[in-house]
Image 1 (cartoon, one colour):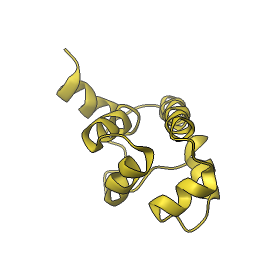
Image 2 (image 1 turned 90 degrees about the vertical axis):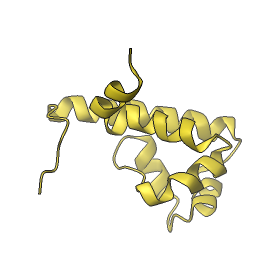
Image 3 (image 1 turned 135 degrees about the horizontal axis):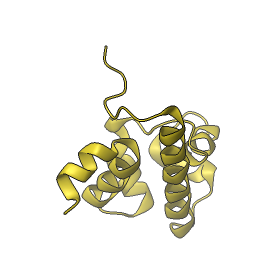
Length: 98
């Protein structure tokens, strides 16, 4: 299985994930949600999953994108486009950069 289509170094991927985590944390705080509250809204079994995402140690499963967008009060296309910037920057650049 081909696991890293972005062909980025591990450090680049880690930096992007941390930046994406800060973006998610900012969205959560703007929605006035605690990590525990967000975990309940998105169906995460443990609120520590939110903490892991916010520090760049994980990814939101694609089958949960709509739940996350709704929980954070953001339009789904805007949310997914934002995630793609951090999770799949090459595809994001092809689709959205001029």
